[in-house]
Image (cartoon, rainbow over all chains, first blue to last red; front, side):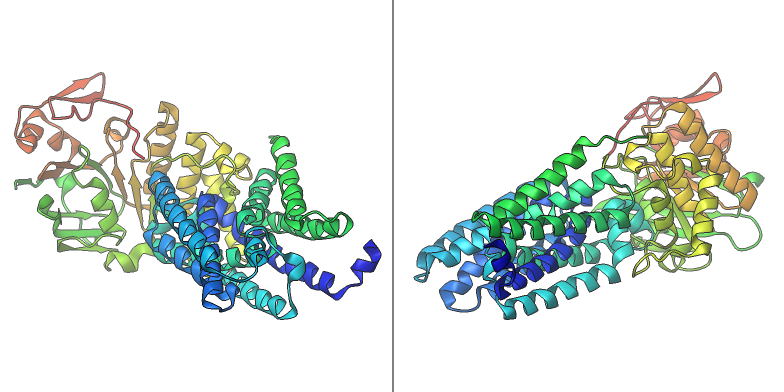
Length: 266
Length: 280
């Protein structure tokens, strides 16, 4: 049964989509964690859900709606460049309202309920060939964006005061970070769903930074952990017909726990 | 607005191009004028202490010199150019701030960012850059722990890295904004010694913003004292007197010299009495 499934086209598509999403999630996650913006990821993903639900009501592609919703919130958060408690409470307020609107959209939507469930919990095995192409194009944009702005992105994430003094345009970099994050989030939603985006964007990066202090190595490790979680999760769900998202989040969390238990030897 | 300018030979503007030339600067936020008519030259090799209570625009002055804030009026030049254009020639040492313990950044990454972190693109390894970073780390005595996560280092070790980060780009001017805050006395001395050594060996002038003048009293050539709405500049002996500070604050203030330390008593917030303040 397992080997039979491995030969299936939809499994190949799922594995490739999972890999693409894991790479971008793992990469951007390092900067998001360094900025202390984990909560923003959650907000962006829930507003991506609102955008997708709105698109369903309008009868257009939910992925387009999701990207629009994520980008809108990401852009606003980037422009505001809030920090600390103010950012926390502002995100909480926006997130709750956005989710409320999403609930309304879902109740207005007369189509299949599975569409909504897929949005919330992911539907990696349902990824189409066209979706895979879209995922890859968006991922290429995010990777190119990170590479083109790597140094200011890192500088402003770890050391904003000095970065500003050295001429890094903090606000522009902040907007760019959140836009790249929004695109990544819209990608991850298609694999693990709105509610589990953190498992690919935050958990691998948080685990990786317990294992190395070298920023480039941390990014690579974060990508590797995200890859293992996604591909492992997809393969396990072929063996055992439980939700893929469950397996992905379990592997990701296991990596985080293992990394936390490893103490620094200095 | 009263301005007390100095006349002493030690404080006079030197011949040749000053590194900082400030003329008639004023800063106002809405109706609140922090200071106006502020002017001074900073020569090569000079150590200028910027003192004063909170809210008198010490940080605004730093931001003006970095080109991050435009003065309400007046002009300022750094190495003969507008501050924004001279920014790559300025080394900036901020106050110590705790890094996240798990932040994936080592001391050598921090110093490397000081070299080219403001440039776009990936940080490609180059022998020249690696060598400059290595030398900057060795110069401040931070080589031993430069591969440890910065968040796990002591405040004093972090400040050494900050100085290496500021010096790695071979600056023409050093700006230190409360670099001693929340450091123990030994680390305070190290920070002052490292900046003083750079000033002595390379002639790089230092603008040093601080609450407490005592740690830098032995090395400060001049003091710029910012009081609410007024300022004074001159040698420490000229500015840090009962007479000058009483005029600045417009209220009787006593400047006491106790065991080689200066204690200012009677200012609205008892400035100069060494207190540990944490600004975040």
